[in-house]
Image (cartoon, rainbow, N blue to C red; front, side, top):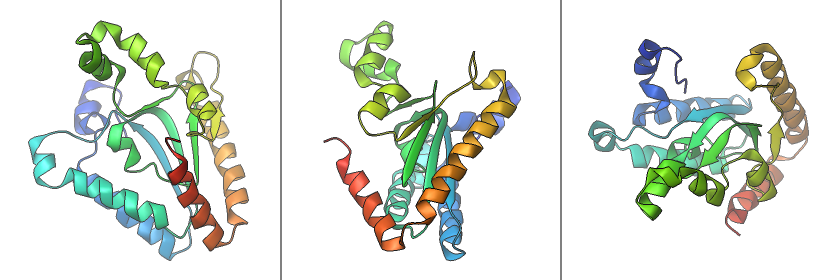
Length: 201
């Protein structure tokens, strides 16, 4: 899901918030990949699924749940990379896989630090405290075993040298694909299942 850069692009791309149709389209493509024995690569950069009434009416929760269920048993390697913001069920809907990597300055969380601070302390001014408590960075999440790898960004962030960052992401993905391709399908799926069970322990 692209977020867009200029205001016009952001509106066109719904600010990077997928609707149910987006998750269903992603699922169809993943099932095609499985059929043709192709790996699935997801690049995650979303503030979450679109929360509008129309999205609820068309089954946003069901579409995300369906993606989680199918991705957990898809018989092909899945590599997920958080390239910016990975938030809430919106990120999870394309984030179940055999390997999860994050860019060095990316964030991954169940609720935004502002939202968390507002719920707990009734003030968004405590967002930095919430972010620290939640552990939203790649370093903390890797230490917790949720993220498998951190891909280093150029000085100043990925946007400072897009070509270099693209090469680093590509090299990382290719390396992981080589590793995952050697696993028998049954072992691949078992490891993915065990990985999912290990979250929160």
